Length: 184
Image (cartoon, rainbow, N blue to C red; front, side, top):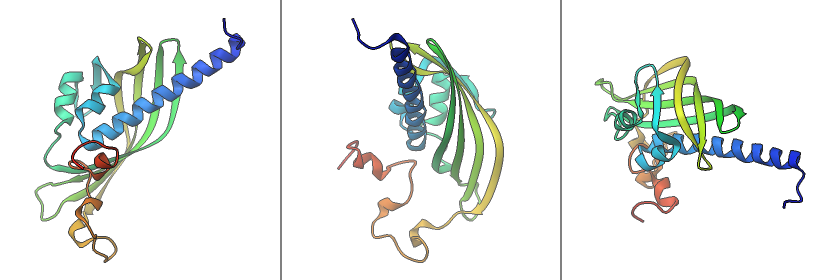
């Protein structure tokens, strides 16, 4: 028998659930930026559905769409903002602010930098003690075509990089080695 008052135990559970939901969103963003099927799969239930407006499908279709990803999208970064979570037992709804950057080869002389601001609307389910996404809808709030991307081979601000791992993310990201994944 626990010595923790029931109302305090409920508060602890609410905090733990919100943390697990937020961690799931973070893992998914990391997986999408690295086109890592294992991380993406850890964030979604296999029977989930996804609607990005430009893509709609079940989890298997979504995973095939995002991994390996379009060759034309050479780099992505998803920056997550606040997440509003409305939890009800083993179900929750979450709205997460996101700014996503995409470097895209549009067949022009140079790659283009695209930035999108929007929100993820996620329905979460807790099954067997684990929170994952059951459905996701993307809402777009703004879009900017930033024009020609920088030539990373020249470095940053006129200073060359001392090693090739400083720029780029979509494939062969140096942080994978930092966290012990992949070749050392």
